[in-house]
Amino acid sequence: MLGYHGCDAKVAQKAVSGNASILQSNRDFDWLGPGAYFWESDPTRAYEWAQWKANRGEYTQPTVIGAVIDLRHCLDLVSRRDLDLLKAAHKSFVRLQRKAKLPIPKNASPNGSKDKDRVLRYLDCAVFRHLHKIMDTLSEHEDDISPFDTVRGMFVEGGKLYPGSGFHQKSHVQIAVRNPRCIKGVFFPLSSE
Image (cartoon, rainbow, N blue to C red; front, top):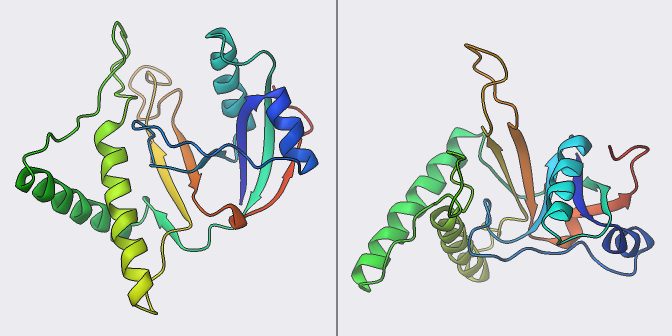
């Protein structure tokens, strides 16, 4: 599978030259939990994201790199079975939080945002971390259970593509790579805009 990662030019150069790995994100609001993030088959969307980061002053030169990704053991959230697993993980997470008298995080929009998308995915990230912890622990004791190498999710985002549309302007598929060995190669696309 091909994925595209928006980043700063310095990071991109190091990753393509083999001098550094692609940055693993581990923020409390990551949409698919911890991992290196890629836009599936969409270098344009990756560039838009990198440009947004540059506009915020976080990147000096927005760039896109591509990667060949082997999904391996993937938590694929376009699969009913895997969606059911995530739902069960949520139920388990909520039960543990309540038993420990700890708050249950909520997904939110940034302060002052007019966007209805809840892009700060605190709850989702906590559920992914909980599920990964369970799978990691079980895999240590059970030969037929493996931790997830990657997580793949589809997101409906942005306004409607046109009046009455069922499609949205920023809908996309993202992949979070937890296991760096799943990244088989990194390259600069012919065009990143």
